[in-house]
Length: 375
Image 1 (tube, rainbow, N blue to C red):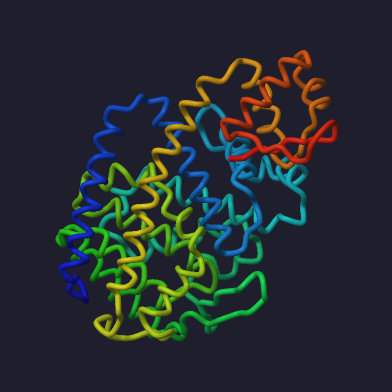
Image 2: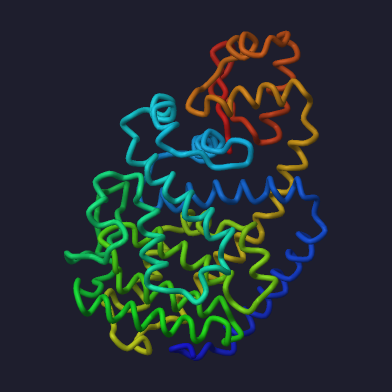
């Protein structure tokens, strides 16, 4: 069972959230397949972007969408190495580390969305395998990808405005203590994930205990968030399982990053505890409930965006395609006229509609104005 008993207030909030989850599941069942495919891809891109930027990667969602499109042909994922030069030339070689993180995160997320049932019961080798995939495109990680840490590590938050660094968690030391803690955690997870009625609470305890162990030398945050999603899909909650592919919880965590690190620290006071009952896990459960609720609310906005997209004129779609093929660029009116072959008036009208619908942002005023893609 859980290492904590939820308060009546938390159970009431869970029941309210469950109602919203069931409602969205019903809407998804009635949704057109094209809209569902677009929604899932949007969520995948958002989740990749958010999870990697939380760890200080530098790619925007628009750039990640371009990478995803470049690596997907005829509905199948192509090898990164065959497209590596094209991607680096487009997005600049000085962001190669960020690109490697994005590609690895994309592959792991795509895997669990499709094969979540194949990974139950969860095993040590499965988690190690996910970690190996996550870091497989980062050559310097070849010596430790898929292996538990051999050196001490810490969970650190960085204030990007001041440069201040704060230790959020001091995890288990490397070696036997980490291996035993992971073995116990996996055994506990398999015994409770399909037995306890509130999957979200199991996922909360699971991900925090994983992060408190911090078993890998690098990539623990990204793998932890992947495991949180996997837990939500592996529990005995059909509606939640259906909904997870269509909500970006990581996007909400990114928007609330200081609160996220504060919540993690408050659970343990910054230290690993051998007995999970010593953690204040309910406080973290409240944080995740809020993030899931916000993610559910975002679906309405995404559906509005999809409706606006399918109403766009052919000319507007051609202009949007120009931006999607060059997400790193800011394009002017004259450049768009040249690239699309459309007359000036058509391009001007399309730009007005694309800005109004939230697909583009206008930078500057007058003849020097340029436009940039918004994901």
